Length: 381
Image (cartoon, rainbow, N blue to C red; front, side, top):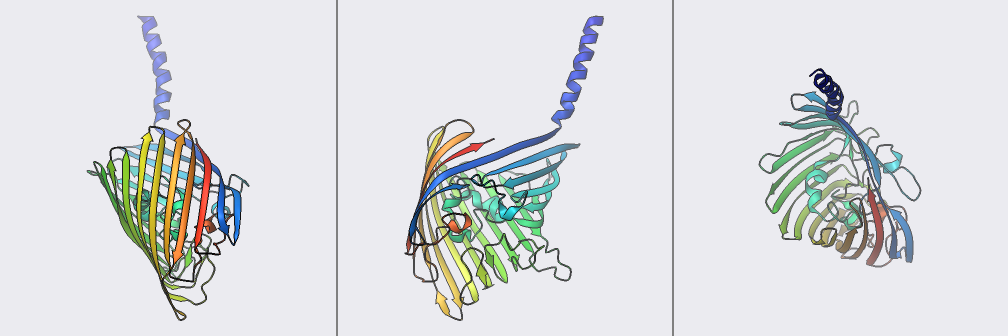
Protein backbone atom coordinates (compact mmCIF):
# COMPACT_ATOMS: atom_id res chain seq x y z
CA UNK A 1 0.00 0.00 0.00
CA UNK A 2 2.78 2.38 0.90
CA UNK A 3 4.43 1.79 -2.46
CA UNK A 4 1.14 2.45 -4.26
CA UNK A 5 0.65 5.74 -2.44
CA UNK A 6 4.20 6.79 -3.19
CA UNK A 7 3.78 5.93 -6.85
CA UNK A 8 0.48 7.78 -6.97
CA UNK A 9 2.02 10.86 -5.34
CA UNK A 10 4.90 10.82 -7.78
CA UNK A 11 2.51 10.54 -10.71
CA UNK A 12 0.55 13.49 -9.38
CA UNK A 13 3.71 15.58 -9.21
CA UNK A 14 4.41 14.79 -12.86
CA UNK A 15 0.87 15.45 -14.08
CA UNK A 16 0.38 18.75 -12.21
CA UNK A 17 3.04 20.73 -14.12
CA UNK A 18 1.86 19.23 -17.42
CA UNK A 19 -1.72 20.29 -16.68
CA UNK A 20 -0.53 23.78 -15.79
CA UNK A 21 1.46 24.03 -19.01
CA UNK A 22 -1.56 22.89 -21.03
CA UNK A 23 -3.38 26.07 -19.93
CA UNK A 24 -0.81 28.27 -21.68
CA UNK A 25 0.66 27.99 -25.16
CA UNK A 26 3.06 29.72 -27.52
CA UNK A 27 3.23 28.53 -31.13
CA UNK A 28 5.83 29.31 -33.78
CA UNK A 29 4.45 28.96 -37.32
CA UNK A 30 5.17 30.06 -40.87
CA UNK A 31 4.75 29.79 -44.64
CA UNK A 32 7.48 29.85 -47.29
CA UNK A 33 6.15 30.35 -50.81
CA UNK A 34 8.60 30.43 -53.74
CA UNK A 35 8.22 30.10 -57.48
CA UNK A 36 9.23 30.97 -61.02
CA UNK A 37 7.13 33.46 -62.99
CA UNK A 38 6.86 34.18 -66.71
CA UNK A 39 5.30 37.49 -67.81
CA UNK A 40 4.65 37.92 -71.52
CA UNK A 41 4.67 41.74 -71.56
CA UNK A 42 6.22 43.86 -68.82
CA UNK A 43 6.84 47.34 -70.24
CA UNK A 44 7.16 45.76 -73.68
CA UNK A 45 9.45 42.89 -72.70
CA UNK A 46 8.94 39.31 -71.56
CA UNK A 47 10.29 38.49 -68.10
CA UNK A 48 11.30 35.31 -66.28
CA UNK A 49 11.69 35.94 -62.55
CA UNK A 50 11.97 34.13 -59.24
CA UNK A 51 9.29 35.59 -56.97
CA UNK A 52 8.18 34.94 -53.41
CA UNK A 53 4.71 35.01 -51.87
CA UNK A 54 2.05 34.48 -54.53
CA UNK A 55 -0.19 31.61 -53.35
CA UNK A 56 0.45 32.91 -49.82
CA UNK A 57 2.68 35.66 -48.54
CA UNK A 58 5.87 34.21 -47.04
CA UNK A 59 5.80 34.74 -43.29
CA UNK A 60 6.69 33.53 -39.83
CA UNK A 61 4.91 34.32 -36.63
CA UNK A 62 4.35 33.67 -32.96
CA UNK A 63 0.93 33.35 -31.35
CA UNK A 64 -0.07 32.35 -27.87
CA UNK A 65 -2.58 32.39 -25.07
CA UNK A 66 -2.76 32.34 -21.28
CA UNK A 67 -5.73 30.87 -19.41
CA UNK A 68 -7.16 33.52 -17.07
CA UNK A 69 -9.94 31.28 -15.73
CA UNK A 70 -13.69 31.41 -16.17
CA UNK A 71 -13.48 30.68 -19.90
CA UNK A 72 -11.32 33.75 -20.54
CA UNK A 73 -7.78 33.93 -21.84
CA UNK A 74 -5.21 36.51 -22.88
CA UNK A 75 -4.11 36.17 -26.52
CA UNK A 76 -1.44 37.67 -28.76
CA UNK A 77 -0.07 37.30 -32.29
CA UNK A 78 3.05 38.72 -33.94
CA UNK A 79 3.47 37.96 -37.66
CA UNK A 80 6.37 38.94 -39.90
CA UNK A 81 6.35 39.06 -43.71
CA UNK A 82 9.53 38.55 -45.76
CA UNK A 83 10.89 37.97 -49.25
CA UNK A 84 12.49 34.54 -49.69
CA UNK A 85 14.83 35.59 -52.50
CA UNK A 86 16.46 38.52 -50.72
CA UNK A 87 15.62 37.86 -47.08
CA UNK A 88 14.26 41.39 -46.84
CA UNK A 89 11.45 42.35 -44.49
CA UNK A 90 8.04 42.80 -46.09
CA UNK A 91 5.41 45.48 -45.48
CA UNK A 92 7.88 48.34 -46.00
CA UNK A 93 10.48 46.90 -43.64
CA UNK A 94 8.27 46.35 -40.60
CA UNK A 95 9.42 43.66 -38.19
CA UNK A 96 5.85 42.42 -37.65
CA UNK A 97 4.12 44.06 -40.59
CA UNK A 98 1.49 41.41 -41.22
CA UNK A 99 -0.07 41.38 -37.75
CA UNK A 100 0.79 42.57 -34.25
CA UNK A 101 -1.89 42.53 -31.56
CA UNK A 102 -2.77 41.57 -27.98
CA UNK A 103 -6.15 41.11 -26.36
CA UNK A 104 -8.71 39.08 -24.43
CA UNK A 105 -10.83 36.18 -25.71
CA UNK A 106 -13.94 34.73 -24.05
CA UNK A 107 -15.54 31.37 -24.79
CA UNK A 108 -18.98 33.01 -24.77
CA UNK A 109 -18.45 36.68 -25.69
CA UNK A 110 -15.79 36.59 -28.41
CA UNK A 111 -12.49 38.47 -28.53
CA UNK A 112 -11.30 42.06 -28.21
CA UNK A 113 -7.84 42.82 -29.60
CA UNK A 114 -5.65 45.91 -30.10
CA UNK A 115 -2.76 46.60 -32.48
CA UNK A 116 -2.04 46.25 -36.22
CA UNK A 117 -4.82 44.07 -37.62
CA UNK A 118 -6.92 42.93 -40.60
CA UNK A 119 -10.11 44.81 -41.44
CA UNK A 120 -13.58 43.25 -41.73
CA UNK A 121 -13.37 42.94 -45.53
CA UNK A 122 -10.35 40.66 -45.09
CA UNK A 123 -11.95 38.74 -42.22
CA UNK A 124 -15.40 38.08 -43.67
CA UNK A 125 -15.67 38.81 -47.42
CA UNK A 126 -12.22 37.88 -48.74
CA UNK A 127 -12.50 34.14 -47.88
CA UNK A 128 -15.29 33.88 -50.50
CA UNK A 129 -13.02 35.13 -53.31
CA UNK A 130 -10.47 33.05 -55.18
CA UNK A 131 -7.53 35.23 -54.13
CA UNK A 132 -8.62 35.33 -50.48
CA UNK A 133 -9.21 31.60 -50.28
CA UNK A 134 -7.28 29.12 -52.47
CA UNK A 135 -5.50 31.14 -55.20
CA UNK A 136 -3.62 34.02 -53.62
CA UNK A 137 -2.22 37.29 -54.85
CA UNK A 138 -2.11 36.68 -58.61
CA UNK A 139 -5.92 36.52 -58.82
CA UNK A 140 -6.60 39.72 -56.88
CA UNK A 141 -8.92 42.31 -58.41
CA UNK A 142 -7.12 45.17 -60.26
CA UNK A 143 -4.81 47.04 -57.86
CA UNK A 144 -6.49 44.99 -55.12
CA UNK A 145 -8.86 47.95 -55.01
CA UNK A 146 -11.17 46.25 -52.46
CA UNK A 147 -8.36 44.83 -50.26
CA UNK A 148 -9.70 41.28 -50.53
CA UNK A 149 -6.06 40.25 -51.06
CA UNK A 150 -5.05 41.98 -47.83
CA UNK A 151 -2.63 44.48 -49.39
CA UNK A 152 -2.83 46.67 -46.29
CA UNK A 153 -3.49 46.34 -42.56
CA UNK A 154 -4.84 48.94 -40.15
CA UNK A 155 -2.67 50.39 -37.39
CA UNK A 156 -3.82 51.65 -33.99
CA UNK A 157 -6.92 49.50 -34.23
CA UNK A 158 -9.34 47.90 -31.79
CA UNK A 159 -11.22 44.88 -33.14
CA UNK A 160 -14.09 42.80 -31.83
CA UNK A 161 -14.78 39.31 -33.22
CA UNK A 162 -17.83 37.40 -32.02
CA UNK A 163 -18.17 33.71 -31.38
CA UNK A 164 -20.32 31.71 -33.81
CA UNK A 165 -24.00 31.57 -32.87
CA UNK A 166 -26.01 29.08 -34.90
CA UNK A 167 -23.66 29.51 -37.86
CA UNK A 168 -23.68 33.34 -37.61
CA UNK A 169 -20.62 35.41 -36.68
CA UNK A 170 -19.84 39.12 -36.89
CA UNK A 171 -17.25 41.71 -35.97
CA UNK A 172 -15.96 45.22 -36.36
CA UNK A 173 -12.81 47.33 -36.19
CA UNK A 174 -11.98 50.94 -35.40
CA UNK A 175 -8.60 52.44 -36.30
CA UNK A 176 -7.52 55.61 -34.50
CA UNK A 177 -5.82 58.54 -36.23
CA UNK A 178 -3.60 59.12 -33.16
CA UNK A 179 -3.43 62.77 -34.21
CA UNK A 180 -3.97 65.59 -31.71
CA UNK A 181 -6.58 67.99 -33.07
CA UNK A 182 -7.34 65.69 -36.00
CA UNK A 183 -9.40 62.86 -34.56
CA UNK A 184 -11.06 62.05 -37.91
CA UNK A 185 -7.92 62.33 -40.06
CA UNK A 186 -6.75 58.93 -41.30
CA UNK A 187 -9.11 56.99 -39.08
CA UNK A 188 -10.86 53.81 -40.21
CA UNK A 189 -13.79 51.64 -39.29
CA UNK A 190 -15.21 48.43 -40.69
CA UNK A 191 -18.00 45.95 -40.04
CA UNK A 192 -18.60 42.42 -41.29
CA UNK A 193 -20.77 39.35 -40.85
CA UNK A 194 -20.84 35.76 -42.07
CA UNK A 195 -23.32 32.89 -42.00
CA UNK A 196 -22.35 29.25 -42.53
CA UNK A 197 -25.17 26.76 -42.85
CA UNK A 198 -24.66 23.35 -44.41
CA UNK A 199 -23.22 23.80 -47.91
CA UNK A 200 -23.79 27.58 -47.97
CA UNK A 201 -21.57 30.42 -46.75
CA UNK A 202 -22.80 34.02 -47.06
CA UNK A 203 -20.83 37.11 -46.03
CA UNK A 204 -20.92 40.89 -46.26
CA UNK A 205 -18.55 43.65 -45.15
CA UNK A 206 -18.09 47.43 -45.13
CA UNK A 207 -15.03 49.62 -44.56
CA UNK A 208 -14.40 53.37 -44.57
CA UNK A 209 -11.06 55.18 -44.27
CA UNK A 210 -10.81 58.96 -43.99
CA UNK A 211 -7.78 60.51 -45.74
CA UNK A 212 -5.86 57.22 -46.16
CA UNK A 213 -2.13 57.79 -45.81
CA UNK A 214 -2.53 61.43 -44.78
CA UNK A 215 -0.79 61.20 -41.39
CA UNK A 216 2.31 59.20 -40.47
CA UNK A 217 0.78 57.82 -37.28
CA UNK A 218 -2.74 57.20 -38.57
CA UNK A 219 -4.69 53.98 -39.09
CA UNK A 220 -3.52 53.52 -42.70
CA UNK A 221 0.07 54.60 -43.27
CA UNK A 222 1.36 56.07 -46.54
CA UNK A 223 3.46 52.98 -47.26
CA UNK A 224 0.41 50.73 -46.77
CA UNK A 225 -2.32 52.42 -48.76
CA UNK A 226 -3.05 51.65 -52.41
CA UNK A 227 -4.78 54.99 -53.03
CA UNK A 228 -4.56 58.55 -51.70
CA UNK A 229 -7.94 60.23 -51.38
CA UNK A 230 -10.14 62.27 -49.08
CA UNK A 231 -12.29 59.23 -48.31
CA UNK A 232 -12.18 55.55 -49.28
CA UNK A 233 -15.14 53.21 -48.94
CA UNK A 234 -15.34 49.50 -49.69
CA UNK A 235 -18.39 47.30 -49.38
CA UNK A 236 -19.46 43.99 -50.81
CA UNK A 237 -21.16 40.64 -50.36
CA UNK A 238 -20.67 37.11 -51.59
CA UNK A 239 -21.79 33.51 -51.44
CA UNK A 240 -20.05 30.12 -51.63
CA UNK A 241 -21.91 26.88 -52.27
CA UNK A 242 -20.48 23.38 -51.92
CA UNK A 243 -21.75 20.61 -54.20
CA UNK A 244 -19.98 17.32 -53.56
CA UNK A 245 -16.30 17.93 -54.31
CA UNK A 246 -16.97 21.32 -55.95
CA UNK A 247 -16.97 24.76 -54.34
CA UNK A 248 -18.74 27.50 -56.31
CA UNK A 249 -18.56 31.18 -55.47
CA UNK A 250 -19.79 34.63 -56.45
CA UNK A 251 -18.59 37.92 -54.96
CA UNK A 252 -19.49 41.54 -55.69
CA UNK A 253 -17.53 44.44 -54.23
CA UNK A 254 -17.64 48.20 -54.72
CA UNK A 255 -14.83 50.66 -53.99
CA UNK A 256 -15.26 54.42 -54.15
CA UNK A 257 -12.72 57.18 -53.52
CA UNK A 258 -13.53 60.88 -53.26
CA UNK A 259 -10.96 63.45 -54.41
CA UNK A 260 -8.38 60.83 -55.29
CA UNK A 261 -4.97 62.41 -55.80
CA UNK A 262 -3.06 59.32 -56.87
CA UNK A 263 -2.14 55.74 -56.24
CA UNK A 264 0.88 54.24 -54.54
CA UNK A 265 1.09 51.61 -57.30
CA UNK A 266 0.12 53.25 -60.58
CA UNK A 267 1.56 56.73 -60.20
CA UNK A 268 -0.28 60.02 -59.89
CA UNK A 269 -3.25 60.80 -62.06
CA UNK A 270 -2.84 63.71 -64.45
CA UNK A 271 -5.72 65.41 -62.66
CA UNK A 272 -7.27 64.94 -59.25
CA UNK A 273 -10.20 62.54 -59.66
CA UNK A 274 -13.29 63.96 -57.99
CA UNK A 275 -14.64 60.41 -58.08
CA UNK A 276 -12.82 57.12 -58.58
CA UNK A 277 -14.91 53.94 -58.48
CA UNK A 278 -14.44 50.21 -59.04
CA UNK A 279 -17.18 47.59 -59.31
CA UNK A 280 -15.87 44.00 -59.15
CA UNK A 281 -17.90 40.96 -60.20
CA UNK A 282 -16.19 37.62 -59.57
CA UNK A 283 -17.24 34.02 -60.15
CA UNK A 284 -14.95 31.23 -58.97
CA UNK A 285 -14.88 27.46 -58.70
CA UNK A 286 -12.66 24.89 -57.00
CA UNK A 287 -12.83 21.14 -57.51
CA UNK A 288 -11.15 18.65 -55.16
CA UNK A 289 -9.88 15.96 -57.53
CA UNK A 290 -8.57 13.74 -54.72
CA UNK A 291 -7.71 14.35 -51.07
CA UNK A 292 -4.35 15.95 -51.89
CA UNK A 293 -5.06 17.70 -55.22
CA UNK A 294 -7.43 20.38 -56.53
CA UNK A 295 -7.99 22.58 -59.55
CA UNK A 296 -9.53 26.04 -59.52
CA UNK A 297 -10.72 28.74 -61.91
CA UNK A 298 -11.98 32.29 -61.61
CA UNK A 299 -13.32 35.06 -63.84
CA UNK A 300 -13.50 38.65 -62.69
CA UNK A 301 -14.97 41.70 -64.43
CA UNK A 302 -14.12 45.12 -63.04
CA UNK A 303 -15.76 48.32 -64.23
CA UNK A 304 -13.91 51.51 -63.37
CA UNK A 305 -15.25 55.06 -63.45
CA UNK A 306 -12.87 58.03 -63.13
CA UNK A 307 -14.27 61.56 -63.02
CA UNK A 308 -11.87 64.51 -63.23
CA UNK A 309 -11.49 67.95 -64.75
CA UNK A 310 -9.86 66.25 -67.75
CA UNK A 311 -13.07 64.30 -68.38
CA UNK A 312 -14.47 60.89 -67.59
CA UNK A 313 -12.83 57.54 -68.19
CA UNK A 314 -14.45 54.11 -67.88
CA UNK A 315 -11.77 51.40 -68.07
CA UNK A 316 -12.83 47.76 -67.90
CA UNK A 317 -10.77 44.78 -66.76
CA UNK A 318 -11.41 41.15 -67.73
CA UNK A 319 -9.41 38.58 -65.73
CA UNK A 320 -9.28 34.80 -66.15
CA UNK A 321 -7.25 32.74 -63.68
CA UNK A 322 -6.46 29.02 -63.40
CA UNK A 323 -4.65 27.00 -60.73
CA UNK A 324 -3.75 23.37 -60.00
CA UNK A 325 -2.31 22.29 -56.65
CA UNK A 326 -0.85 18.98 -55.44
CA UNK A 327 0.15 18.20 -51.84
CA UNK A 328 3.39 16.27 -51.55
CA UNK A 329 2.79 15.96 -47.80
CA UNK A 330 0.66 17.50 -45.08
CA UNK A 331 2.87 20.60 -45.03
CA UNK A 332 4.33 20.87 -48.56
CA UNK A 333 2.57 21.42 -51.91
CA UNK A 334 3.48 22.33 -55.47
CA UNK A 335 1.25 24.35 -57.79
CA UNK A 336 0.90 26.02 -61.17
CA UNK A 337 -1.03 29.22 -61.85
CA UNK A 338 -1.91 31.34 -64.83
CA UNK A 339 -3.64 34.70 -65.14
CA UNK A 340 -4.76 36.55 -68.28
CA UNK A 341 -5.98 40.13 -68.17
CA UNK A 342 -7.52 42.30 -70.88
CA UNK A 343 -8.43 45.97 -70.50
CA UNK A 344 -10.76 48.06 -72.60
CA UNK A 345 -12.73 51.28 -72.58
CA UNK A 346 -10.16 53.68 -71.14
CA UNK A 347 -6.66 54.85 -71.99
CA UNK A 348 -5.88 55.82 -68.38
CA UNK A 349 -4.67 52.28 -67.62
CA UNK A 350 -2.68 49.93 -69.82
CA UNK A 351 -3.33 46.50 -68.20
CA UNK A 352 -1.14 46.12 -65.13
CA UNK A 353 -1.71 42.62 -63.79
CA UNK A 354 -1.44 43.50 -60.09
CA UNK A 355 2.32 43.05 -60.48
CA UNK A 356 3.06 46.43 -58.95
CA UNK A 357 2.62 44.85 -55.51
CA UNK A 358 5.60 42.51 -56.01
CA UNK A 359 9.16 43.54 -56.89
CA UNK A 360 10.10 42.20 -60.29
CA UNK A 361 7.54 42.25 -63.09
CA UNK A 362 6.15 45.53 -61.83
CA UNK A 363 5.42 47.30 -65.11
CA UNK A 364 2.14 47.39 -67.03
CA UNK A 365 1.95 45.90 -70.49
CA UNK A 366 2.39 48.09 -73.54
CA UNK A 367 -0.82 46.61 -74.97
CA UNK A 368 -4.27 45.90 -73.57
CA UNK A 369 -3.30 42.35 -72.66
CA UNK A 370 -1.00 40.71 -70.15
CA UNK A 371 -0.39 37.10 -69.13
CA UNK A 372 1.54 35.63 -66.19
CA UNK A 373 2.29 31.95 -65.56
CA UNK A 374 3.83 30.60 -62.36
CA UNK A 375 5.10 27.30 -61.00
CA UNK A 376 5.69 27.27 -57.26
CA UNK A 377 6.33 25.36 -54.08
CA UNK A 378 4.92 26.16 -50.66
CA UNK A 379 6.02 24.80 -47.28
CA UNK A 380 4.14 25.40 -44.05
CA UNK A 381 5.45 24.85 -40.54
